[in-house]
Length: 235
Image (cartoon, rainbow, N blue to C red; front, side):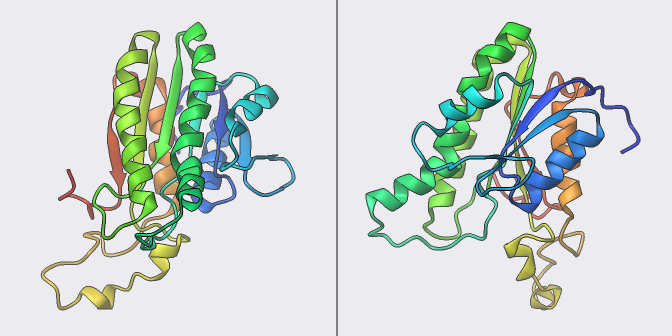
């Protein structure tokens, strides 16, 4: 990016840095002069390791990292959708919901007091599709995360805090993109992706960076698809 996003000196927490999008976002913010705390689910040098599905994980993490100006929740909606059995156990359901909804929500509420005190803050959540293709936990978690974001942004806007969601489409390096073949759509009415190809992790990272900047002060409560126009029919 060539624009000065006016983010130098800010502190950000980016979860999901073990995956390609979380890592790309962390790198993008670092290049803009942001001090980034990388959160991962498996041990990695230079990162803070957290079990997203463990109860109390957000509170424990807050004790380690302190306050932050920016929170990027990238633990949800980033894997290929897999149909969930209708008889899924309560334990399995709760573990996934904790990773994809409860942990991001709880971490945000842990960091919000510091943002309110500073009268500035940015929360950006990566979410999955709003239109279920089948029965899957990730759709339920994504819907909950979007609804929570839209509601809470009305409570904290007066403090200069914005809360938004980014909805990635088919992005190179993600499992869903590996299965995408343009030839599969040649006999259909139109291409699945109007641009004709999956996007890059940097496309998502740049959109996240924009929402973190002062240039997006008046943007809050949105779900922004970054998918080359693929999701134009979603509500």
